[in-house]
Figure 1 (cartoon, rainbow, N blue to C red):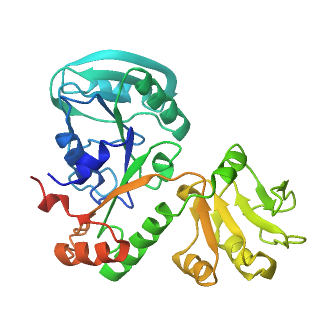
Figure 2 (cartoon, rainbow, N blue to C red):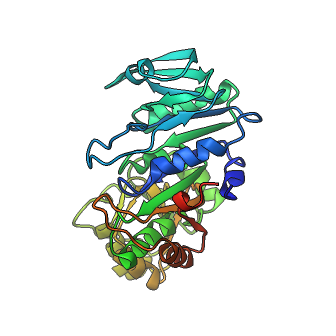
Length: 337
């Protein structure tokens, strides 16, 4: 058993996020669920998308099915709850509707296969997780959806696993570079406790904090504005972007001499939508980006095979990516024990 299973148990929640379809996210979820100590821990699992299908609806490739073990709790839609192939005890039926019906929470009384399609938004997912904790659940495992990194937000889960692979890029150097960029964002340092206290309640706009600790809303500036002018910002120590951080805003901050020493703060890494090039230029110029919240990146897994059949060398890929990110990287199909 790989060592990151023990690391997972240090947290109350885990998100498994694929950087692209067919990067091995479901295989990773299966690996984790098969090895968690259900005899010692109360474990619940759900998905913010749909997982457990035998065939991918987009690429038409075969997918591993989700098998829950006896004693595991799960959240899925009414439609997929009716299709379950296990005996279960009904715990709750939510008031919230998804496109596949209400979310049903149940406990598996036998091992069996299940399609997971739980809460469809980050806010409803957080509510469901809160209900699970109140019910005595020790660990919630969340299967993330394609291009919806919100399920991996630190506001949702304490820890995460990234799944990457040849489907993300068939060029090994590009794959390593693109994955390393995401890892850099996940691992951004936290801002000060004082900043967290002041800024965390603010969920809109752009704000500045001067050397005296005074907080000011920059009403004429949004992070998505094309025409951004920073004026009277010579005493700005911290610049907080409550929404999305994009290339244009980051470039304006980098080129403004009065903001050369400023600390740029975002809520968490899921709010950052900048290219690796702009990110590198900003840091090369001495810029600092910090976050209010962060998750612990427990592991990175790889699927060296793309849906088109292109195969990268697994050992080379794992070694190069591990060197680039400073973390162990695993091909779970080669490490099934």
